[in-house]
Each structure stands twice: as C-alpha cells, then as structure tokens.
Length: 258
View 1: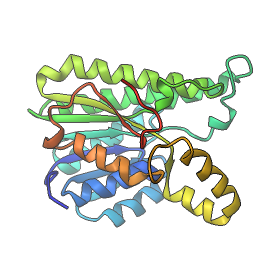
View 2: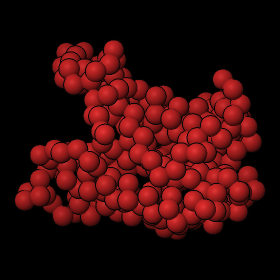
View 3: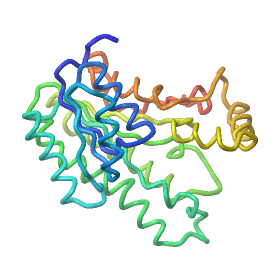
View 4: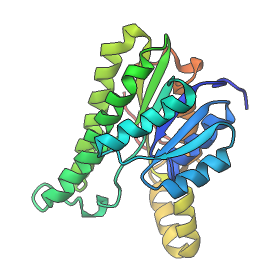
C-alpha cells in the first residue's frame, strides 16, 4: 500500500469498531500518525495496537465538549498539530427505539441529536483551529443515505445525518479558500467485523439479512468497513484534495442519486 499519508496527523472520532476501526488501520497503513478517539477506550487501545506505527488511543464522548477538547489537545500535544480529522461517532444504542414522528420518545430524539449532530459540531469546533494552521487539511464526516432517502422509521437518525451533510457544506464553503476541504462519506448497508461475528452465531438470521440487502444492491457483494476506510483515506490524502463539499455514496449502487 503506498505511503500517500506519510506523516499526516489525523484524529478519528468513533474509532473502536466498524468503519472507524477500519479507518484507523487503513490510515496507519498508509503512513499516517493517528489518534484513535472513542468512548470505549479499552477497545480503541486494542485497535491502536493492531494499527501500529504512531497510533495511540484516547477517551472521548462527543456529546461532552470537555472530553472532545481534551482528546484533540492530546492529539495535538502528541503530534504537534493536526492535518486531518474523521468524525465518525454515532450512538446506535437508541436506533431501535427511533420509531416514527408520533410514537417517538423525545429522549431518544434528544440523545440522537446530541451525539450524531451536536457532537459533530463540537468535534468540528475543536479541530478547526488546528487544521486551519496548515495550507492543506481535510475533515471527513460519516453520514448516511438515510439523510436523503425515505424510511417509515428512524426519523431522528435521518434528521441528524441530514444535519451532518449541512454542517459539512458550511465548513467546505466557509474555509475552502483557506485550504481546508470538507466532505461526507455516506455508507450503505455495511457488514462490520462485529456483525460478522453475530452472523456466524446465527447463520439462518444472517442469510435472511444478507438476502434482503443483496436483493437491493446491484453488486456482487455487500459492503464492508474497509470499503469506507479506503474512501476516507482518499479524502484525507493529496489524491482527494480537489474534492470539496461532496457527499460520497459508498453503497454498491443500492441508492443512486443524480
């Protein structure tokens, strides 16, 4: 794998599992110095050890401004600055209770917005002063096709992701002239490592889910975390420096937009 991120200083928020963990490993493999920030510090530390290189882990709860500031400060102290950030964290613990606009428990809505949207703003505010010290820096947000698709459930999740898209466009338009690019990764259904383990434990249920999503995906397979990590690595590298204000759909064609 080419060293196109050699020496880049990058923080990944939401790095212990799934897309975030795969991204930490991919960035480190391409030569980046990576701060793996997550609410599950123990697992983030394991990811950092697996990634190797100059990768280390810190605690963060992106709904808590103090811990966001502390995580960014730790990365800056360790690396001497920042060249990139991937804001990937989300609270998926409440997603099964995200019903519809009439039945929705407002505590679920408030928690979803606190992490999936307000938390992304907090991360943005914390990293921007450091990113803007560099002539070419980048920030990538993880959003979702839910932001512009349509579902009978999960309104809180969809609203939060639509807000992330809007935040990205604001950052791209406000600071693009200063050398900062901002973009969104919009994943489709993804089989994470954790999901693979669950599938192995329940093969019949796994086949049902696999068949369901494969029927809707014009591709030979379902997505994996590494597919998204590759896109993030591109957007944080010089190869992606002319991409700004974009939503990159990585979904095997399951949702096509014009």
